[in-house]
Image (cartoon, rainbow, N blue to C red; front, side):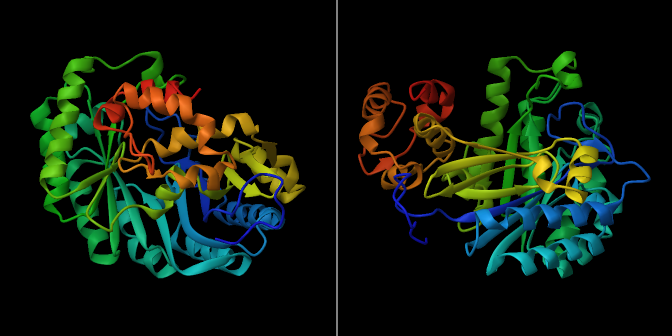
Length: 390
């Protein structure tokens, strides 16, 4: 953790640095998805977008000179719609531009369809060390209700293929699906576990605004109490299999946590490149957040001309940093060491002494002064806990 050269921000050291790369295309956009994604068109130019990503990263270099990059996450969209050759050229360019650590975790999100499976070996040869599969369910009826284009057999085949190639594989599961029972949700979790995966992300289906499901929810969505029963069935199944719930929606065997996401939740820094990507960079003057132009066409045009036109930068107000820190850290089951608050925000822990006392009184946070850790009650009522720090 290199020391800062000036004390203006109150930060004593720079946090670890990650790189997020956004590839915004999907074969078909799912009706529940509110991510920046667009339907893949036949004339989508992979080479032009890879060039844009590398121009974007080069433009960002003055803000992170000399800092090593510990993790890379290629998300979307569905990055596996890009060829292995494109991913290889992307990662070669990244290695040429930044100090990518020799043991860096490099994750790629992929869909389970047979089209993507044929590319898995090429992705591994390009340098991908961790594959994250968007399984969601193994039940064909549930997949159809979610608007997914793969089926249960393809999901099973994808996990088997991935485990034969990649040292680390994550499977995304979704629960509280239309007409889903606790037993059906448990069966999905058990099926994923049967392959021997060591990381499972389990998400509650939510009706996000500005999505088809947000506008017209599908019939059969479980009511709150039923959804909680389904959630508990999934969680208990994963915990009984020796998984640790280390984050609100993430479960892993010991030592298999996603290092990239841990850096987010520990309020680390990350470069965000690609259409719609977000970043967070600390410096002697404070913490800056960045946002790229959302639409691929606008993003490409800027990167081919003046990259600065696609990047919005703003310094986070010092008064907002305590809440931002807690918003991330309280997602972690084990929380973070209390000293990290001052290291990552530049504020004394005394800044949040009152809300901490109130949270402890309500049984939402561990009273241990050396930790910032939510209790089991705090995890369940996370929004109530976070409200105290606003």
